Image (cartoon, rainbow, N blue to C red; front, side, top):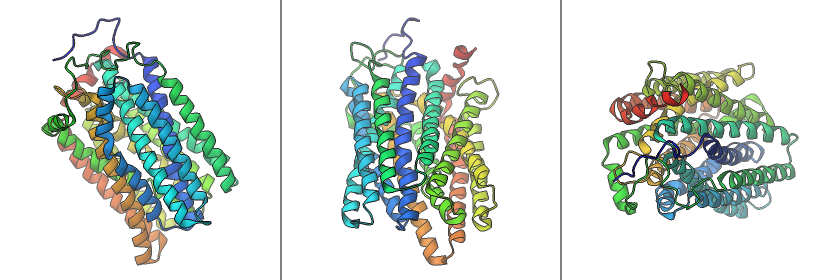
Length: 453
């Protein structure tokens, strides 16, 4: 049974509060960027480790995030999502600094460094899962329905902006590279992100401390137990189809994440700072793509006759073409417009991502009994599995290809071609998944016109 609709004076989270949640997302993105780009490149290029090692560590932190549905369910029942967000970000910061320390210890004591790395990446997975799922659940449960898709786009754009700014800043501060400089820069970044998050969530929820009673998606009945919640979600055809699309598209997306910086170092001879800035260029493309899709599509205004699936399909197919171009760049080498190519790849990623996010927010409150936390947790777990497999396929596949072919350009070419094929498959799945499954989200998005008229 749903709670009565709130009055105009109580329409859920304000735009300022939505921006504050965006600051949380930006902090999470900046901290994870350090792990998946900077440390990954250092292990493969500077410390000459097999690409499968950082890929396995990153994959492990995604495997840990299989606990997202449980953490989301905990925040549903716990009465304060802010505590879950702040606690998760602190755990994430602790794990990140352990991962940095393990990286600089690799040449002195490899075995001990790997033990510290495994513990660190475990904490990273717990921190990202607990804070990220709770932040999205707070957004879904606290935002009035007609604002929900727009709010999702705003916070995701802020997350990507955080990745871009941190990547460019860290890349500049790491030149010239040294282990000591890495520790100093990383510590400064992590402390800053933790402080921003704690300030952002301070008193963001209602004074009575009940975070599930101030938006139209609130439910008066107590949350169901975890098994009942999962059963309700898995019985929904729309939710199942959407989960499959999330899995394939995010696996394709993350395969490039762990090999882009090694690609820049091995094929184009870029320094750690330069390759980190190249990663920032890709994130900048994602940011622009999200803004374009949000304003021109339907997440913000919905004034053009395009549906969410069109933006998803355009983004997936565009990403496939950009990856095919990177496959060509692997053979051409220096002289190829690598920065522009990477920016276009990010731009197309942003197109499909913002439409998928809007759909996810629309479906988050659609359950009869389930709360937003556990539903976001299920999709977060699907994304985590896809990210982990994508990273392992990218890093491990690159290692196998390099050994089998003994020619780095051809090895990268094969991996990029596989990624392109996965994006084509994701586009096909999007057509099927959104034909019916995203109709509820579409109805919500169309109502955003009232907000932006």
